[in-house]
Structures are given as structure tokens and as C-alpha cells.
Image (cartoon, rainbow, N blue to C red; front, side, top):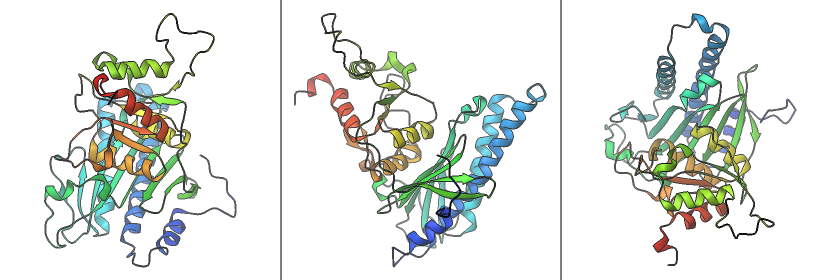
Length: 348
């Protein structure tokens, strides 16, 4: 969403300051974290734009292979985010998708930050949207000690804030903290400032758009295939009344989790990545992707579940744990949960 320059423009900085005043015991540390993450997002967005321009203006002169380009961008994003979070001294550890174990940043810090530095990187090749996802937890051990890996394995319910930065036709920052709703900011590149675009966004109760990766169709179980057929409006039998067809959902799939989630947040509907023979425990990462997005969806009035089990209630056992997920409008997700249960459970 574009921002029009009016007298009512609110910068991210102004929004954070005003929001902090609502909480008398706030120390300003969480606000500083959000500023640091937004700064890193601006730097990453600039590097992505430069990469796209170089590709478009001199395609024959490019010596970087696509895989090398994606790897470089991912490493660049991780470096910028980690550097930004180290400056403040309020983060004790940072965990990214490429880490085998958490990276201790400052033993005196009180927050743990979990990052997917660059989601959907391959979309750079076609100038489609990609994103950064972040999740913030409080540590429970004493400051001054080195936090262990077990301290990172907290339920998504414990998140104090989460969000994402979407790098597309414009740069969008979306974040939530408990009791503050979900707010969307757009970067004005000429001023280098994020401006409030949508305050307290709410997911529609129901939508007519669904999003999933159909390339895994052959690995889906019967319930998922049946639900997919229903979404497409396929007839159950040749005798079904053609003059009174059920409404057909629109199919949209970008291939970047952040981009698909952002559309669902704005328009409603459902995104799902179910179990399959290829990914028996799901493909998306619980801590880097599902937990932060689930918090955003719930704070916006939506729902996020692993086929009936609330995502935020899952206790992780490994920082790289995966999970199936359905998220979006409440009515759509509840319908999906009913459809995706095994047939022998549907009458219970």
C-alpha cells in the first residue's frame, strides 16, 4: 500500500514513541530492537534493488550464477541483521535458519531474536517479492550468563513481538506486539523513513482466495486432495447440479511465505502447507517462520493451526523443527481443519 504525503503521516519512530507511552513500565529496549530491525531492512532493501538493477542492465556481463547470487544475498541479509542487533547490547542471542546452535551476542542482553533473514530468495530472479521474518522472546535465565539452546525452545505464545519486512514493489514493515494490534508501515525511499500505512489491521472473517504449493499433490493424503478439489469447485459426482455450482475460490501462490502471508493478511482466505510424503512433518520452520506469522495472524483476528492444534501452543524440541500449517481467516481455517482430519475422525 502506497503512502500519500499528508499532514497525518506518522513515522515508525513517532509510532513507537507514542505506543511506548501506553505501557508505564516500558524500558524502551523493545522499541530499540524494532528500530534496529527496520534499519537493517532498509539496508537489505537497497542491496536487493542494486542486485535487480545489475541483472536487468547488464545481463550478459553478469558473472554471478543465480545460486551464488541468492547465497550472497542471504549472507548479506544475515550479516546486516546480526550487526544491527549487536549494537544495542540488549540481545543475548540471535538464531537464524543457517545456525546449528544459537549465536551468543551479549550475555547481558535480555532478548532472544530468531530470524529468517531472507525468505523466498529465488524470487529475486523474476523480480518478485521476498522477505525477512523476525521473532522476539525474553530470556528467562539471569543476565550475564550465556543462554543455552534450551532457552530458545519456547512456545510461540511467549513471543513479545514478531514481524516481517516485505521487499517488493514497495518495502513494507509489518509487526505486532501483544495488546498493540498489527500495524503496517511503508518505506518512503526518498526520505528513508517508514510511514504508518494501516493501523490495527484485521483479517477478514472469510476470504475467497487460497494458497498452497500444488507441486506436492502426489504426496498429499486423501484429505488434502479432497479439500483441494473442494476449493477448486470440482463436482463430487456427475449427478451434481451444474446449474447451482458451489463458489470457486481464487488460487494464488507466489512461493515466498512472506508474500503469500501478506496477501492473506490484507484480503483474507487461507494459506496452507500440509504434510505430504515429501515432508511428513511439514516443510515450514516452526520457530523462524510459523510462530512469528501465527502471532501476527492471531493479533489481527485470524487463526493459525497445525490441523487443529494451535501453532502458538506447540512446544519446540529443536530449533530447526518443522510443522504443517494452515493460517488466515477464521472461517476458512476452521473449514480446512474439518476437511483435513482423517475420514475416521470426521464423525467424532
